[in-house]
Image (cartoon, one colour):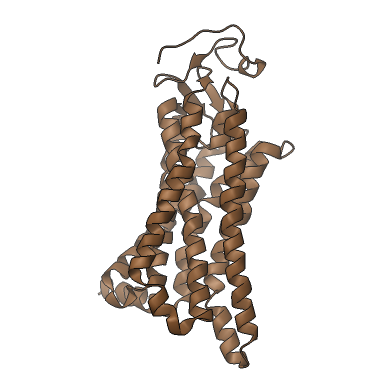
Length: 331
């Protein structure tokens, strides 16, 4: 698409290198990811925990995938869902961490519009898939506690695979309009994006065109997907709690609740910071930029690191298999 010149672009473009002039979105237009605003001098030090969290997350999640894949006894719905969670965690963090580390280590901040929109699509698709898996895991716990005798017939491996496929298609269809809407927008050359990755609203804000439709769609998706998923999770746990309190035995009651502990921890790590990140970009004008960016990154770094640990500790069968492989490999 050819570049178009204009002398009537919005004032917010005047702060960029091409003041009062802009190019339409093209493959050659360069955007600049600044990293963490105000902390550029500390990028090297910040990269140490970032890379450590990322590597630990990869090791933990690949360990889960390897052990479940090798052990026939773990080819059950619960562990297949755990593998789906591991895959979504790996994919989400890998979609942005390598570029963030290039910014921290080598000061490679430039990115083309096409690359930026591609990263945005994959990042939001995989993070949406993560939410879908958490809903499926809540349903798994509901069936296991409320309908234990029918668990094997309701949740078969084939149905789990179908849930994963439907969840992935949902994520793709809902996230595809993000890059499509922004691909039609003009961007000032060398627009500065105050972020470590191409988050949708951060990229939309540096566009020189009208982003009303893109902004409204982003808000709609945030409330529809997160709201719908949280509603299903809340309904599952409401039914679980009702069933648990009908159990007369305190020991059985406690055992039923313990099976949900790992999933509740995953929920607490996934949703609060995610909602904060989505809303503060639009309404959190008083929030310090570097605080917002750091929390936004940690939201997609800490859960992938901790989920394998939490599920490994709380799931006896998985823990025993992991220990077995670790002990075997040490000899």
